[in-house]
Length: 236
Image (cartoon, rainbow, N blue to C red; front, top):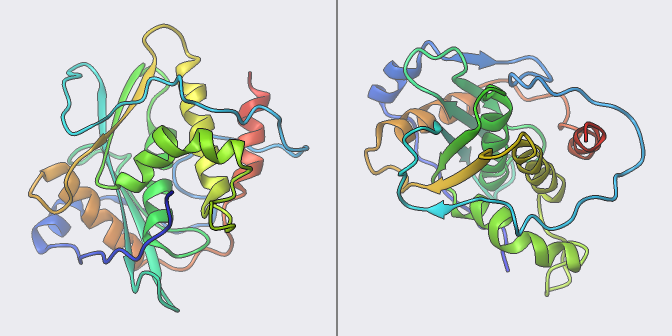
């Protein structure tokens, strides 16, 4: 059972800020570099398990040919009234896809971590077959690699009787992964766990971008995650 827990986020280090100061900061509603469109309609029925998806939850990366991107979330006052969250995506120094964004919707660290992974996938080129997203969020990895099948069976209700938090975000992320794998043989996404604040340059840079995202203006409204998922399903 996964419950959202308060996770304190450290502030960006000065050295990290220097590395990411040129990163593109998304301020407008609907930003984030997503090329995904939306379409109206009723909820799709294909929201089944991705237990067969080729997703690796590991602490090492041996996929030298994979495109590697780092994602991170940050939240000031996580779990408290008035909390503020941001997310960061880091492809490499000077890469125009590097992203700082204010977390849309509910301001929590876990939600920001999930959306950071989503942005990583959305921003990655369609020409890439193998994508490795490095994150320090075990929660995000577990959502789609361990708990999703059981949540679907239980209609996203926990054993406590409470609904699973971030349901629409998790379902949309799972659909993004499924769509990626439909590109053909060898197409897959690896979600790789890295220890946060351990000195790994990519993770530190993503953390700095996420903390810059905390400083951005509040987004007018949340993403319409269920609507975006239906659009993906219509593309089959």
